[in-house]
Length: 505
Image (tube, rainbow, N blue to C red; front, side, top):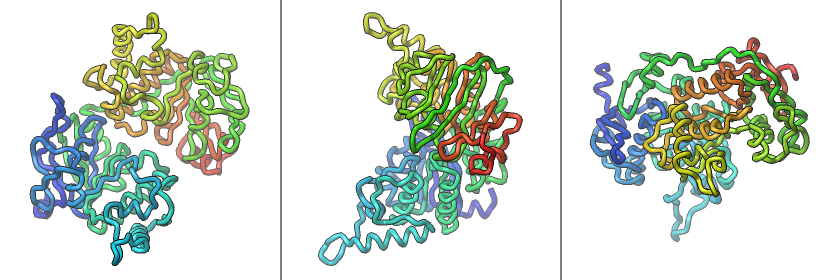
């Protein structure tokens, strides 16, 4: 640290904070500063303690030990209102706007300007929203209801709300996980403008390219403890990864070379009017086939129709040559197909049920006797798969909602792998999980393919597509427009096809 840095007073400082929940120390002795005019990345594997830090800074939790300081003075945040009063705002991955209020009303919520007779001044509310959007360089109608806004626009509204409350510290917790490349760049333009105006930004992401692009400083956590804080130019991505996971990753994309076997999955002429049209492809045993394309291209909708979650207007799906009943997940499961959905919390798990019950749900009948689940059998089955996937948890009886995002994803995978599927469909398999867990999920996918499972993957992360797929199917506007073998797939060929500049398959 230079003398100039020592002389600077952070807008917000975390100093030696510790927070435990029962016997588990979620955070132990963590310290780092947030300076005005800087974006500061906080990185670590799922379960490293990042969310606990965010909740302490937001006033949701209070530290058991240590201090939080604003402008060099000790601060105590007993509630979220205290944190907001200190100029701290949190932008979460999933914004929490009031859907039936207007954008402008959401921005001034709790601080409505009033006229002479004490009535709410709606003209002033609109003017405030327009001023903030002009400052942020975005166009959003202040009078439109919040319901129906894209996630990207909702986050911009949350930032406008923070500025309206004179926030000086902006905490962005996985804000880009559900955004397209264009939306990410717009969000970063706003973040850079605020940073350059003197705000301090704390940025949490598992995407290293975003961290390097936006941030000037990075703090790394592991197992609830502070590992290092460095200027971004003083640390490489490889060094960050090693410090996060405490080991060298053999490879982020450990793809095994497998000779594909017989065709397992055949999809012919799949159509859903207005969503996708005439989609045909096949997948062989031991093969990983990836769907790539821009957001809205129809990739997730296709695989949901293949599995039977969504209806289709035309087309045939065959597994091992046998035609599957349309719009019937039960029939797909019975035939040996499994789907790991994009939204693990809403579609993949029952958050209030235990870890072991979630793992064994698809096999509940097989593990039952006279309609009652056998506890020991259920526990053995859950233990087998959670151990194989290296899942971190307290007890198998804990609610799955208590796990980190990466470990929740492992439970979803365990649930379906316990069925020994012939076809495994994984939609955004590593979204929102840390680099160490990503490597484990990739290793698992590769080993399943080596065992003869046919894998269909949907991913918005181009490196993941290129690193894991034997073939890439590129979708645009509801159609497969290119089929690219692994040897020919690169960023240019995939993106050109996704943007309408590739040859139609």
